[in-house]
Image (cartoon, rainbow, N blue to C red; front, side, top):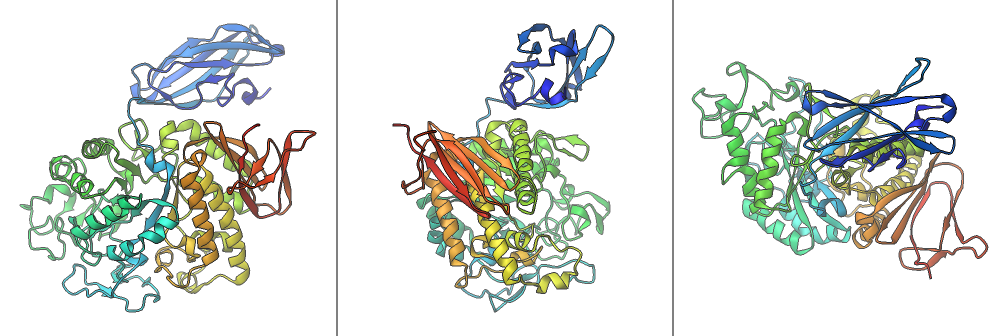
Length: 619
């Protein structure tokens, strides 16, 4: 008998409730070994990690028989505790034989901490501001950073490194807030409900992750007032705005560090008397300092320095507060697992004090419920820290499935996440297929890899063959179908809906191809966006897997008796599903009626096809 048949944490006969629990919730646990194994005693061992790894051992008395299985049960109490509990079981026989089952994770979160639902329900659109839309060619004269501007919108971004071996990223294309404003109706027609901006504050690089001045919109993008106008116009169209908060590091060229003297005041690089000097860690002032991943142009910040915390979070006019008051609705925190938990907790509280509906999303690339960073287990999802995370595990699972893997692995990965995450966090995931940090999803699905073994010059010049592009489009339609039907916010990286291709940065950051979009693909995304906006099951329904094996992935989302089916066949052979009831397309036309003899509808899935169907009410 396998360990899984003795205890399955996803089986309500073994564990209730499912998954993570609010603090104070009793957890009922039952072992179900075979009667013939002869086990006479059982114990639960629970290790409370956030209580100095306190260990409790609880007896699990025999509670009866179910068929040919013994039942050993107990209740684990979680009162007055927040964090992870690692629990395991021991079975013993009278002859001295022991069986120890491996440790499992139980996430205990603050059930009183509310997470606004709006983010996870709708579509998010990620904008890399310099490359989305420009209304005029800007003049960089007087702007920080020694910038150059491409006069041609379709020129290639600069990618060759400088003498230090770094790409300076000082070439701009001139995308602006006015350009975004001009395209708000386009975004609304895609079904977008949240605009997520990569950094928009003044900075010397085109990516703006080396902040120069948190108080000022980069002049190439527009003004502070332009931002307020954009937020108001977005809100009038049913959209909200999320900003990128880069608080772990800043720019060498910034008013705070002021490494090149671009700003009039004294920066930390110029004087130890600067009010910003305590913000940084110098090993030898002024030329040796901690920086983000050793990149000299991105000096790291001491996020525990009181004056920095006050400036970013706690003062009445703090950065967090002022931009929410200007019209933003939330923050995505760059490299969230490199920020101290206490910094995030204070930031979250300050944001909610300004806007009770504000949402804080963190950049974490792994399972955020048990992430260890810098030797510390993080509290990201315990309540009052991060409301949700960038869901890279979702992206990885989709890619593995469509690039030849088994759909069962997708299900197992996502069910493990659903088990580990508090429900609100699971439903608030930022579910991206591509971001500014990844290879364009169309390229990855069409070519089949990131081609890292090739030279960067090769990747800069490469364009997909017609066969690769067709394959990529077929797979992308299936990937996006699952993405828009899955719990969490489907997050669309600018231009993916237009068919943009390219390998890593900066080839994944080319300008949006206005006038040369793949219109069929754009129409596909618009249809998915309408479905996500209008169908309550896709916005907030539970999930149940119908099939997940080989190339076939099928699941339902149900809300208040209304059920939508997402079915996709990423394999090379046709597949068939048989489901109770009659099913209709999203226009209400009955496409798969129930057979009179069985009451089941037959749903055929040719290779590389997928569909959304809605179950008709039972007469």
